[in-house]
Image (tube, rainbow over all chains, first blue to last red; front, side, top):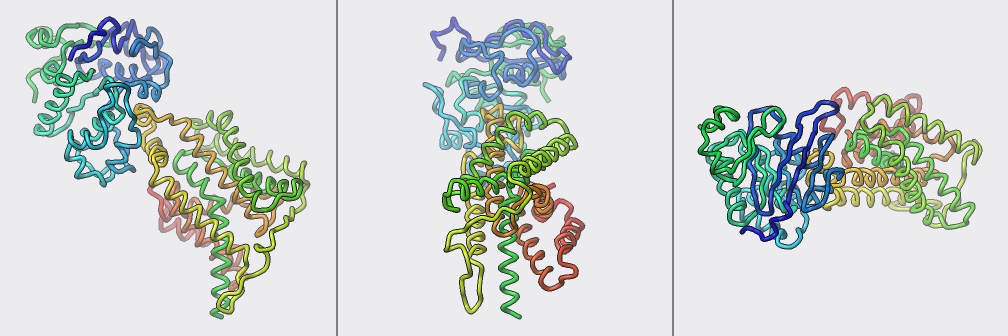
Length: 248
Length: 287
């Protein structure tokens, strides 16, 4: 489901320098994701991958450069306005609201989307993750890691975003859950044309789910390529991502 | 003797309900938003003076003055929250305490300047004066009214916080401010509204308090002590905890003064010490 409107990228970063306080973590980062496109963000631990996502969401001090979303400059917008504009962030720590039930976690921040982004509601996310329906009355802190990750993704889908921004969604999960999540994220990106930014330690998985990829090294983009092409480029992967291609 | 006991329990419960209305907003702002707002007592006093003005100067009925007390206290508090308090959210508890206790001093001085230091009497409607007889016992009509109001407020608070989307958003924002923002909750506004509701309840409590305990410029200090005891015994941020603690302390206070006059005024402190000794986080506290 490629879109015709390819001239305006959905998400675009231009020459971004960002960090915490005075400390610069990202320097000179530019990237763009078209509507329905998907981008893998690879790199070793601590190179700035999560900071990149936090910069997109407005949690990090943007020192230079611009962040555009759907053609609008959102560089100065607070996080809640970015979320309402259609950026669907799924945080790394999952950050499930512990004193809300599973269903309240889904409904408290739910929003109707604009246009074709309006498809997610309680029944459709329960169809996607039937486990959550079984646990709908449980409190957010009574879930397993896999269930928490499903809830975190479902909670963001309920905001009907036009892009899904996932921060290491498979980290620390049992292999069977990892398989399930890969299949479902893949279905959303490939079959439904949900735009995707995916930070992931497992390069093979991330490259399989996306069409473009960047590799971050010490706060700058060290390499950018098509995902399929990078998947075959063992030398580059070895150099920047290390052991992760083999998986665990 | 049984009759006396029933009346003491009733009067104690009524006093407890007054403490509940005065304190529950503080429990919410302290427990949910981690802001130590000692000026809560000053907002209660403001509500009391609003009622004095509305009934005496404007000549409106007492019942009309109650929503006025709520609204004025809520609006004034949100003015302070937007301009001053929010700068202190990350400033540490000592700074919050010093600033807000300073506000109580200022409010007390302002009240003394405008209204004088005398007690402010108010005129109650006929149906709230005198007593209501039931089963041969005489219950103060105003106290019955107070208990009913407090029960309604409790019900509305529990419904609002536990069963509405806005309530879920408050809890979400408290659980994890960053995740709430990242999912589209305007946390600043949610907190400002919560703060206004809590202070509005203090204002309502101040208005309801005049008939039971009087109103003068020291109100903000005097009842701050009771508020802090209710909040710490009940547990921060717990509406049920505030309700139980306020009832317990109200009954203990009245029963202590009635049955053990020598010990009377110290009873609530003994209970506070006993409860906090056994449960430092308060009866319903989570931390």
